Image 1 (tube, rainbow, N blue to C red):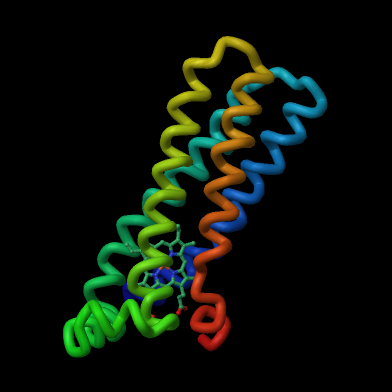
Image 2: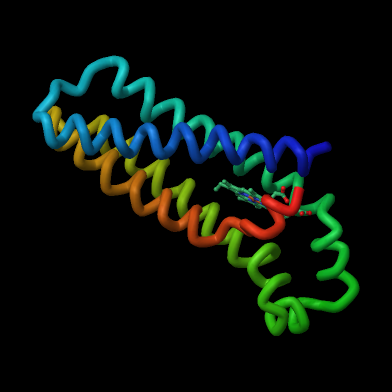
Length: 144
Ligand code: HEM
């Protein structure tokens, strides 16, 4: 059940994050004013990723992969690229990405110009998006 929530919520996370990135780049390029709607889009991406982090943490401990790690040990997990990706790289890089989104969101609030606000969101959210995309277990996701 929790794995299913993590799996479906991932669509929301990606859609909202991609939307926030595009919105930030468009705002920057067109020299737009950073309005309440831009704040809401960035905030929604922050909230969506934080929910995914919480659900991900629970998913981790109930996952059969975690059970495998307990059985075979950390050394074997590191040697096996599939297990390493799901149990180490995906969660670790996901947490870094969510930290970047949080830093980007809090930094943008301190900026005084509209373009600096858009730029901060654009940079931090884009790096986070790339990190997340690089470590999603795609084969597992599409196998369901
Ligand atoms: C950054 C946002 C994240 C996204 C977009 C994301 C997305 C996904 C997706 C699409 C899957 C495959 C689900 C499936 O098999 O249908 C998955 C699996 C998994 N994720 Fe995440 N995830 C994120 C963060 C995290 C975090 C932070 C953790 C742990 C702390 C985590 C733990 C896991 C685990 C353990 C699995 C494997 C579950 C299993 O098959 O038993 N994820 N994730």
